[in-house]
Length: 207
Ligand SMILES: [Zn+2]
Image 1 (cartoon, rainbow, N blue to C red):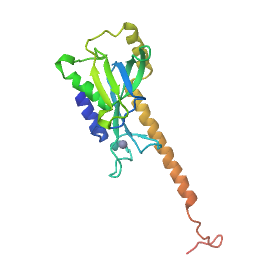
Image 2 (image 1 turned 45 degrees about the vertical axis):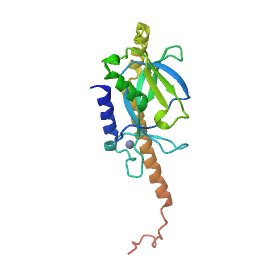
Image 3 (image 1 turned 180 degrees about the vertical axis):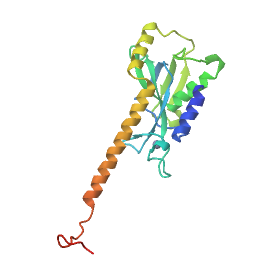
């Protein structure tokens, strides 16, 4: 399955059709290497200052798929080499817009790739002040370059600890736990608010 199909499948699974929220920290130019298969994670946002919710999927009881809620935004979890920070291997949450460009590269003969790590860096220009569709501009480096063996070893270490799949699963199960807690809390609050019913004479059933 190529990345585009995978994205479409991710979108279907979460009831999202792309677009979405972005999470690069600042405007500027970034250069990174995608090291492994990006895995979709969907989040519901409720405006600034409100906690967002990881989407656990409509079928799994995510409560935010009613008509008055927005569709979740889909991002992708993967490992990257961060060229801005001493080539460190890091887990990354990449916006849909960036991965969508990479998916286009994948089917372009000049930039086609089959396996991970992708054979070239990607260059992302982030402009936080631009309109939502123009915040991210993604290019491919002009030439391929080798990922050093030590970086592959570092990636393997990190993957042993936590694959992107596992990271996404953990985020989802944390959300499920949170939902359970909230349910319990709501239950308690309702009990406290229940009106006091007048009591009948002790020992006698009220008819
Ligand atoms: Zn959801």
